[in-house]
Image (cartoon, rainbow over all chains, first blue to last red; front, side):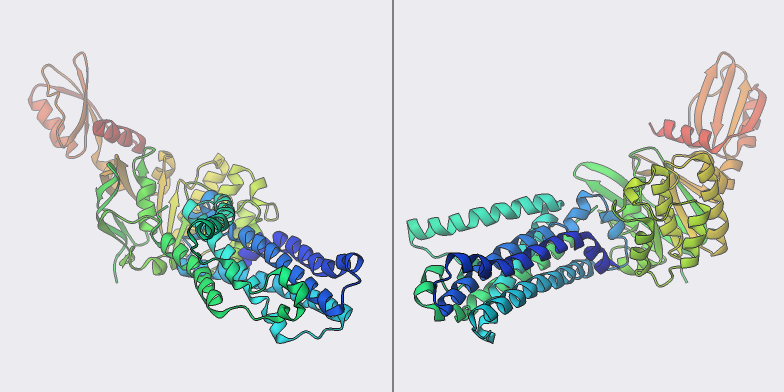
Length: 243
Length: 293
C-alpha cells in the first residue's frame, strides 16, 4: 500500500545512494593507503574512521533531504493529494508510514557504510571494532532524520517537495552562518547539530584514541527531539490543510 | 438505519469574501442515482470536497450514511469511492500498480471486478499512467472506484474525456452494476443527456445555491412550456413562472408547477393555448440558470 508506494517512489534514489555509500565506505582506506601509508596503524585508522564518519554524514544528510522531498508535500504539487487523502486512513498514518519507509532506507544506508567501512578498516589496520566506535555513527543517523524531517515539513508547508528541498538547502547553508556570526560577534553559542560530533579532525592526528569518544548525550537527545518533531508538525499542518 | 446516503443542512463554504457554497440542503436517498448539475464554478466540486472531508464546511453540517463528515471522515471513506474532477494519478505507476496500491485500503476490494472492468473498458493495464490517453486515464479512475466495493460512489465529472462509446459503457455499468449492489451514486456532470439517462434524482446548483432538487420524473412532469396567443397576457415571472417570452401576440411561459391550471387561467383571460409541451432536462437546466442570473 502506501509503504510500498513510498518505496516504489524512492527506490531508484535509494539504489544510487546505496552504491555511493558502498563506494565511500571503501574509498577512505584506498585513497589514504596511497597518500598516508606511512602513518601508524592507529593514526591511520582514526583518520580514516573520521573521514568515513563525515562522508557518511554528508551523504546521508543529502539522502535525507532527497527522500524528504518525496513526502506528502509533493502529492499537492502533483495534484494527487485528493486521491491519496480520500483513502480511509488518518493523516497520522500517512505521515508515519512514509517516515517508517524512509527510516528503513536510512538505516540500510548507514548500516552499509558502517559495516563495509569498519570491516575494511579493521582488516587493513588490525584494529578491533568496538561498540564505542559504532556509537560514533549515532549523530550521523540523527542528522539524517533531522534533514529528512525538516525537508518533509518544509515540503508540506510549501505544498511542493522540490521547494521544500530548496528551502531545506537554504537552512543548511544559512544556519551555520548564523551560528558562526552569533559566536563571533556576540560570543553566543547557538545550539547546532554539529554539537553532536564530539571530536575535531585536527585533534585525531595527535590523539587517535579520541576517535572512540562517545557523542555528548544532551545534543543527541535535543536534536533527536527536533528530528521527530518535524513529522509531528507536518502532521498538524496537514490536518488543517484543505484541498 | 438512516435512509439517506447524503444529508446536508445549510452547508456553507466561504473563501474570504467568496461564497462558494451558500447553505445548501441536499438529501440523497440510499440506493439512488443522483445527478448534481451546475455550471463551472457553481459549487459542485466544493460540495463534493466537503462530503469527502477534504474541505471543512464554514457552517452547516453534512452527513454521509448518518456520519458527520468532520468527525467520522475515515469511516465515511471506507464506504465511499471517489472520482476526482482532475483525473490525475501517479504518473509513473501502471494501472496494475495502482490497483496494487489501492487494494489494501479496502476490505471490500474485488479483484474480479478489476478484471471485469479492465476488460470491459479496454484499459491497457501495463502502461504507465502518464502514457495513457486522457480517456484511458479517466477509465483507470473508474476502474479503481468500481472495484472498491463501496456503498457510495461520488463521481465528479466522471465522463469527462471519454468517447461516446465509453460513456455509453460507463453509464450502463453505473446503472446496472451499481444498482444491483444497492450502491448510491452521486455524480456531477455537465452532460445533461447522460444525467437524464440514468439519474433518478437531480439537484441543480448555481452560484452556490441549490436551485432545485427533486426526483427527475417529478421535475419532468411538472415543468411545462405553454405557448399562448392573446393580448395583454401576464408577462411577469413568479415563483411558478420561470420565464416569459413574448413574440408579437405569442407568449411562451415556462411553468414549474400546475401547468394545466395556469393554462386554464390564461384561457379565461381570453388567450388561446396553442401548445403545452414537456421540457427536456437541458431546457429546464438552462431556464433555471438563466433565471438565477
